[in-house]
Length: 88
Image (cartoon, rainbow, N blue to C red; front, side, top):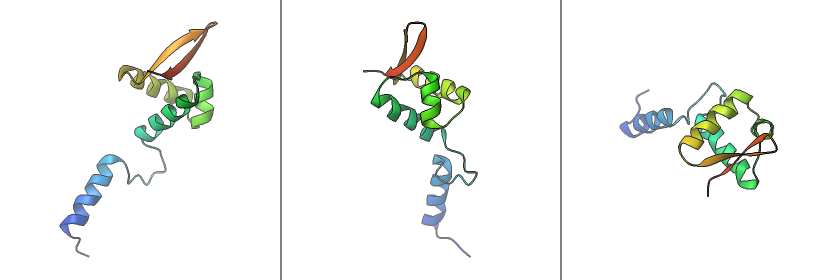
């Protein structure tokens, strides 16, 4: 079956954006969007984010550090417990 140029371009874009992921894994952007959505509700610690996003502790930590470097979220401590919140 011959695909049109438009179909091939659309497929390539979907693959590059991670929209054509057949492995069942979520893309990094999907996880970061979920983290931001949860932090939009209220500040949360790693454990709360892990449960809300259904990801591992290391996944949450890595994505939160990335979002912090981008200036999207920030960490703060209350009574020896670290929390994340959206950066205003």
